[in-house]
Length: 376
Image (cartoon, rainbow, N blue to C red):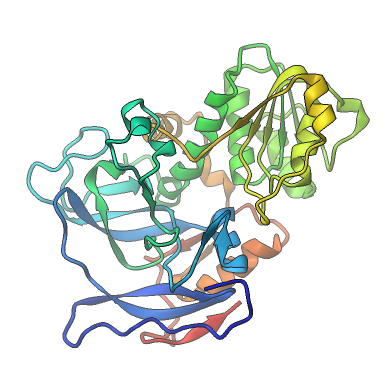
């Protein structure tokens, strides 16, 4: 699949008599097909998960609209979805999750989508998010969670306490991204901080910074309802865009938008010697920042790559009530409504914060069970 307007391809049908399950497959820019995917045998160290709730992420939107993310091109039909939870349907005796807890059929789990090799230098030094020999569920070429079931490494699954909802379980992935980014900024109690972009990750960064004890927390975000939510989560001031009143004030700035002109805004907000953590992903793989501005301020530009070792802490933050991830969920669609879910997210319609696809919700009675193209 490329960004050119070529006709979408249709996934190959499963072999006769194969055990299958329904999936929403991205077959071209803006186009899904509902197909039956074969149920694969478990490999050593894997568990089978019946997928429950899947979050729609900005990186999914890149692949949905452009057929690529960064330099990774979606060149054949792909099942998207990397923010998800589900219920274990099959696990070998003695299987443990990523936190070393016993894992059995019937357990609710959140799944970390990044599958690192475990043996490269980056993995051995504790940075699996920088693994050079990895796969990522829902990013080409590895299928993701917009399907009824998925086999995952047991150590990527984390048991969910009853206090965390299904949607909350899916939200642990963006919370993990936010948590990793906040760690990279080395925030200190009393710091002044700013966040550029109040999407789900940006809002979670706002909440974590408020918990970290910053004394001044500014947010720039063009959408009014997201600014209001940022204020409720701990922002002390908000603006629709950069204004001179906040020029060069902040000790640490988090860019959590599309990483294009927002990087320049982050550099403008940062004081000389500040740390600027870049979390967003630009649509065209380029970012915009004035070199002389960043150089003369002596800024430290820190690039945040996914997450590392965050799920147990994220679970504790939600279970303790310190982070209310459910509050960010604005829309829920069934699997049959996946095209509408992506269209709703991509258009930033009024009130949109986090869009979810709930595979446990009864689909429309006339929803397709075989290949049928649906285009947003």
